[in-house]
Image (tube, rainbow, N blue to C red; front, side, top):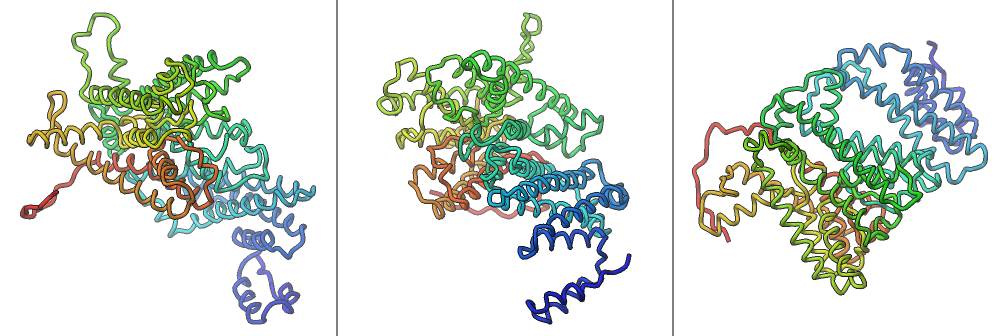
Length: 592
């Protein structure tokens, strides 16, 4: 291909730019072929982002970018030859990048047409953002073709914790890109990448914090995207990864099975695939029943999608609602309250407990052999205790405040509902902004503990809290052995619990400090927001919509780390513990 001579074009701009700069540009660009992939990307970039060039230059840039997409499809070395040695999972990355490039190329064309029609103001910002996304995705595909990059990429082997981390990152990025499309929102002029990132993170981490009523901002297509993010984030990326392996009849790697065994509490490595199959079956069965009940109990005229959305949101402990005021208009509605409550509890106790309970034989035959596992005893007893304490506490603390004006039964129902939803669900039937400081602190304690392991809930988990409580009780009784339900707990379990609680508390303190340094508001409201975000709860006193862009980013990171941190740590601790080749001599430490 003949090289393009830039000197003739740059001569026209010589009166506006220094000669040395033009010479440097000429020397740098002289070797670039116009109709190579790099050349078309480069020239279309210049045409797309040059503010002084007329509108037809952007049209020319679109033609060049169409050429880039055609070359990426039909040049074998880009999408096939260079990636043929990659695993099927890694081959999905260039394919996904190409899909992103194609999607945002189409969006750029639609916005360019809107700008041509005269909608310059509201559509200029999205056009620039979509151009950046298009160029980034196309450039990544181009870079992946280099031998050095392709070789390094093919040798990358992620551990389970890293796979989980990258899975959530990819899910959030895809959700952000989709939610930033004009077709997803009611008013395209209000599109914001930061707001889309916030909502996608909140949905993927099943938190439930929202910058406003999602039903008033997103179209049905955007609501479907949020619902899919909730479902994928609630069950976990690796769970669906195993599902895809089951469908494609591919084997799961041994170290992945070991990690999943530790997290799911399965009896042996060989039962991991079976357990995940049961998890998916239980999930979809419970959500279908919940959707049917919500459809029956919601007011006449409510769509079936609204029932499905609330069922999945409740079971995944997300807390997103299509009702602008959440569930504040249903404070005394027994059926809706109890349906949401039981969906939250079923999603929060964990799949090992559900599996253990569902294995109970209905007929007398086999009942003698069935037993409630030690893990199930811990989860059920601690969960019941927390629900009881939370209900009594909220009833007493808010009797003459937020609960005033309700009947005695509605007061108990509202106190019980918020005791349940504080365990990382995020629904509310009362305005939390009217709660007293003592009630908010009680809710923060419940949020910090959260749900149970291998569930859709967040927090440090009930078993972690139970082990810490048993350790404290053993110390107060001057007993070396830590025990619960006439069973001793291993020192490793104690170390894991203390590690998770300490790391979670330290990370929460850091994010709270950042939030206090950047946001204006009361300490009580900001602390409640930080605790709710970190433990993926979604309850708020009403300050979420007033956060600054920096505050939105901090809360986004808080939700992400709060969801990924304990899960990643759980995967890491589930792996085999390495023993050192030597031990150091012990020394006395003065404590207390």
